[in-house]
Amino acid sequence: NRLTKLELLSINGCESITDEAIAAVTCSSLTRLDADGCKLTALPDDFGDRLPNLKHLDLDSNSLTALPLSFDRLTKLEVLSISGC
Image (cartoon, rainbow, N blue to C red; front, side, top):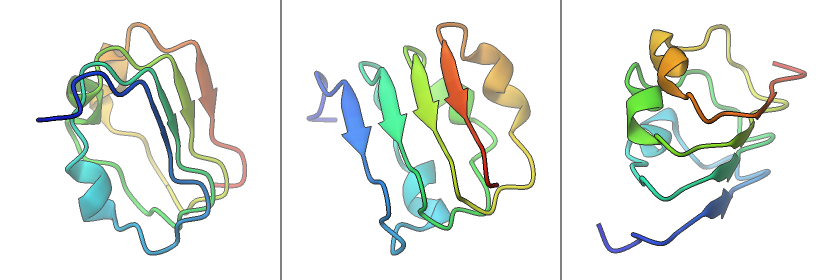
């Protein structure tokens, strides 16, 4: 993984991003993920394990119906925005 210092990933409005692409995101340095309006329908079961330092997560305006159980491992999460899902 070459993105060892990446802290912010913003893919707002990227409707071509697939659920599988989100499942591939693993970055221990990521503190903020903005994925507003990406038409996501699901997050991977191990989402909370892949982003241990996540503090801010914006999933507004997606088609999510549930959050994975691994969300309880996002212990540093301070902001979760899921309106319009």
